[in-house]
Amino acid sequence: MTAAADRAKRGFASDNAATVHPEVMAAIAEANVGHTYGYGHDRLTEALAERFREHFGEATRAYPVWGGTAANVLCLRATCRPWEGVICTDTAHLNVDECGAPEAIAGVKLLAVEAEEGKLAPAAAERMISRVGDEHAVQARVVTISQATELGTVYGIEEVRALAELAHGHGLLLHVDGARLANAAAALGTKLREVTTAVGVDMLSFGGTKNGLLGAEAVVFLTPGLGEGFEYLRKQSLQLASKMRFLSAQLDALLTDDLWLRSAAQANAMAARLAERVGSLPEVTIARPVQANAVFARLPRQTITELQQQYDFHVWDEATDEVRWMCAWDTTEKDVDEFANALERALADSAA
Image (cartoon, rainbow, N blue to C red; front, side):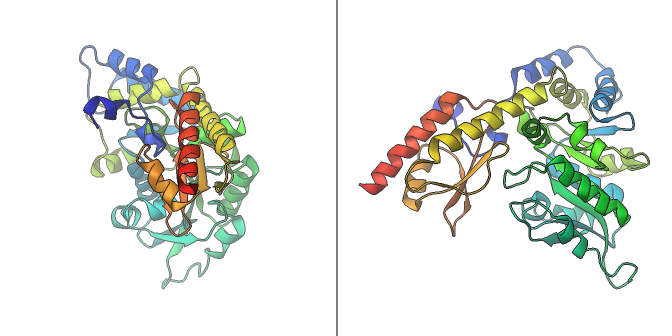
């Protein structure tokens, strides 16, 4: 494949593979004029603080960082002592896809429980809150959920509220890994604060990279008193950007004029279209509810192999031939229809 063809290639491997939104690029270009102080002491970062308060509430404190894993780990570092643990699902990104960073960097133990369709049930979480006060046992401190989940499902508002009430009732905190929070809020038809601050979420890893940014996330504290001294912790953890204005410009663009919602809604709509197009094809089974921007499906292994010669996507479970197709802000109807047609041809080839 030529370099030009590779650049033009479309795929369904990840929303990380998508392009940067033009409005975000424009914001970066606008920030790239003149000189200013570094390390967040600039007008863009100061304005971003107010932008986050507009979306999440007056008590909100937000700190831009480079990556999603860093945002998650820093939330835990800021709130957990070394003998404390974090309750999560067995499929959580923290548990599966962060290379042991919560344990190695935050120094906390993950208390993973099985979950149906990626969602943590209050009863399952409560079972992990045990041996309280026993110096021989790890003490639960944080309940964390992914919204949307790694399996593409979305917690309803009352489901989040129930987990917050459970956590707070035991003196714990509720953290949300919000790498795809925008997709969840778009699916629910809510504002960002309605599915976080208003239902008792204490802290949040706010995702931007998967929703059209070049590379910017944020650690967001919603409950007053949390994250004291975080400025020092961010620096110590290698996440204090010297030219922070370029991170802040991206996040500000995302939170302006509902860009977060427009982009997430497009990704969600394309996932729904994809599931509708391929769900009735022979030997294709939609494996999980399609609620955000992910489609999980099972299909013949030979078909998977043939289709991957044309498109990038991940095999989620090799044992069951389950694949994951991710849609992004820049996925188009044409992308979906061409992929569905390619899948139909691959199925016909397999059957021949």
